[in-house]
Amino acid sequence: MVTGLDQSPPANELWRFNADDSGNGAWSQVTQGDYRYFSRLLRPVGAAVTQSAHVGYALGGQVTEKTDSSIQKTGPGYALPGLVSYDFLTGQWANKSSVEFEGYGTNLNGRAEYVPFGPNGLLLFLGGAETPVDATEESIVQLSWNTLTLHDPVTGKWYTQATKGTRPPTVERACTVGVRGPNNTYEIFIYGGTSAQLGGSSSDVHVLSLPGFVFFRGDSAGTPRADHACVVVGKGKRQMLSFGGTDGGPGLHSPTTTPDPWKQGLGVYDMSEMKWADSYETDAADYQSPTVVVDWYAQGGMGMIVWDSDAVKELFINGSSTVYGGTGNSADGSSDSSDSSQNPARRTGAIIGGAVGGTVVLTIVGVVMYLASKRRRRRQNTVADAIDEYRPEPWPKDPDSSRMRSTTPGTMIETPVEPVEISGIAREELPGADVDWTYELPVPTPRLRPELPDRKYTG
Image 1 (spheres, rainbow, N blue to C red):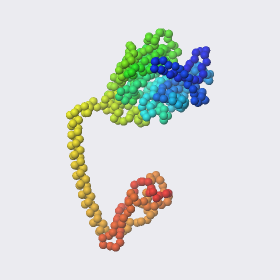
Image 2: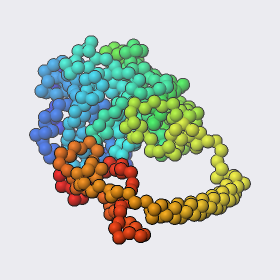
Image 3: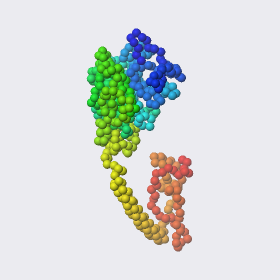
Image 4: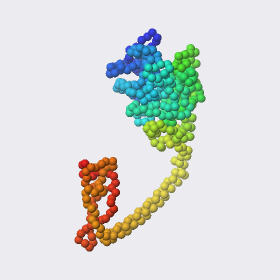
């Protein structure tokens, strides 16, 4: 909250708006369970905010003497590092480090969306600017769209991922909304904002489609504006409502006094058609991903993604069989326009072919097993005859012999270990056919597989 020129910031409080079913509601102050912790939080303006089902998040922002009574510096004040969260159910606050976000861990006038990917959902940060904590007008630099930063709010891990497509200009103070597509995609629409590249406010609408991390630009431009709010409305969740805002130069230092061309500052955007509408439709059809998005996935766009890391890929790709954007567009970029399940002749042929093929395979396996068994019996008889004729010297039984040791790879044993039997099977001596003594079967020096020591080993 920013106060007027001659006003001091109000007391640090948290308020909640309780909506009712009639379109009205009432404000009430929230009592803090840990007021000492709450009072240590600085109150910024321009933080990137979003929420999951039960937790609200705010990244960065800036504090000045007009936003927090403990700050004595005028604008642009100080940039706040840190990711603050508030649990709506428990009333617990938390402030985690954001040092891994961009260059300084700060974000001014950016936007954030909670996206349903990974086991915990992810916070995705969009646009805005960064600066060292002690900010100046010259130190503030708008962030590029070439790479986006994500955060897992449960594990605390930060990730980045490169983007492609027609990216927006660098902007602050834009509005964003997110909507789930019908085929495992999630689209984020970005409208307006003040841009240093454009030297003023943007009128464009761009859409970012996940998991493709690809941007598309809408052909239907709105009116240049920044500091406005956007929300998804209607039963079908295909309309975006834009409310308020202003037009001005970079940083909104030169706002115009031109009347808003939209009545009451309201604009309705059809996200499926990617164009501005003349009116709001309460019963509009369900949201469908725009045609350009569907076509990108259908043309194998997923196969062209270069993931920043395997960890990011695992968060967004559930498996190679997952279809994105439309029927037959898998995670590996392959596309199969034919569907054998819809063709009875192909389905019947597949069943018959599978049955015949299975019978042939079973027959071949039976013959091979019979021949192998017959050959094995013949070999055993030959070995038995050779044993009766050969009388070697006994196999040495020196317990210190290195051949009898079994050690874990990478370990060193300084004292002799007890002999270890191979595979846990004790050696048996073979009796001779025409003598009163026995000899052990001669074998080459065994090459023991590296394995864990015998259970009797205590060294």
